[in-house]
Image (tube, rainbow, N blue to C red; front, side, top):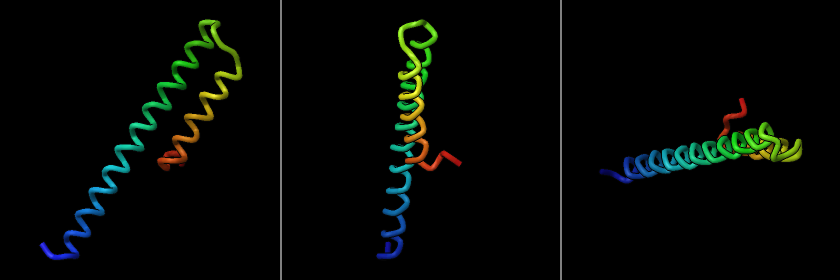
Length: 68
């Protein structure tokens, strides 16, 4: 494998790893938002908790480019 092919392979691996990390972040953010929503619906939280969860979800979406 020449140097160009090696660099291309490493770039592809890095992109794949970044996408996986982004996906994991999205899953965690969505889980947090869902937990907060459930708590609000069960009367254990308030509007601030719901807003905080939405901020986390929005930040994760922006981080992984899913805000389009």
